[in-house]
Image 1 (tube, rainbow, N blue to C red):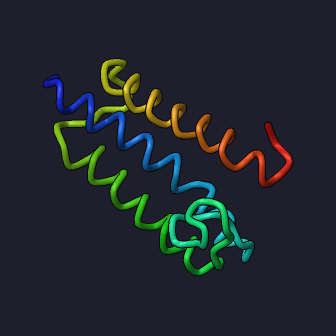
Image 2 (spheres, helix red, strand yellow):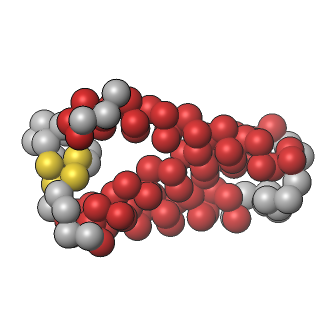
Length: 104
């Protein structure tokens, strides 16, 4: 595997992890923080904005995982950077959004 495949899989995991809270909140009709809110990342965006932002993250994650190299989730060398990116953004999101929603 080439080094840039590893980087691509890391960011694929990060984008897919970021898609989850936006899609879940958007589909459930709940407002949630997004980069388009005022102030960015702190104010609340509408559920429609969150669905669109979550879907955009989903598309980018798909492109990075399945259009760069030959991603195989069963290959440890592919799953580790993907999982690391997913976990990194999940932890950062938990920390960043936890202060708004009673977490950390």
